[in-house]
Length: 371
Ligand SMILES: [Zn+2]
Ligand SMILES: [Zn+2]
Image (cartoon, helix red, strand yellow):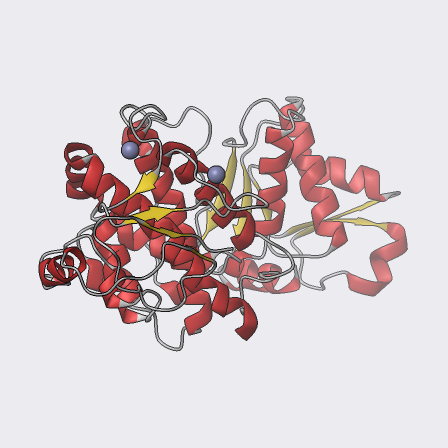
């Protein structure tokens, strides 16, 4: 307050103070143009609010919040009509803006808070209900250092995808000094999120009657690990169960309590999530090719996933059986190897497929599951 008064006075502005008597001796600025000494805090606020052309909240403590809330309330009750500015310096008020959003979601405020002028370096990245397609995610790009949210890596990744989904190198390029565990974890969350879109498309033609097992090429039947005893689920159920399982693992408080650092032991879980969700791509590619192509042309998701899995060694190259031009073109060779008889192994349920794929018998399917 003192600095603002100094600034205004030094620019030949007028500074008018409202002060309750009990505070007068402590903090009254000596250079004020005009001073109103009043009996109480309530009269002070009333005087300030009804004599102002605009109200500005800089970062401050409980008193600031109290006055800001009162001003907002008065404005909403139409007792005052002046604009209210919240100066959101370095995101200081972000938790409060989140709280407004929660209030709106819980229907404590029915209108949005657009009558507030929130001056912020960091726009609130929110798609509010009723957002038009053209306005979807319509906020300025930020560098990752300038994103100060708890979810800034997720926001950064999503921003890179929106900029150009086909620029895989850019999307997978971690910012300087980015923790690798968090980077892998956030990308994996994003893959799961986007795989839901593929699943919605698959629902149209991947029916329990037509795809009664989760298969990719003829050689593999995948057992669904979402059940106490892994079992053969129809492909579409397998897909849903696997994405649900991945989401609950990645959101689990036990394994991933923080999005700032990931425990070494939990990082090991990422590989198994990768392998399971990859089967959705391979099923779509080998059984629903038109749909896969349409989705892939638009999203480049399988390409991004393949490069990601290879870069971080999350899936052995030989297991990446969907050919991606320029990434695993030699997949045709792999497929040929897989279809030529190599050696007989008994058909068995493989508990965990951490080991590279064993050669499979062409005539009988190998059954694979992982817990
Ligand atoms: Zn299917
Ligand atoms: Zn299942």
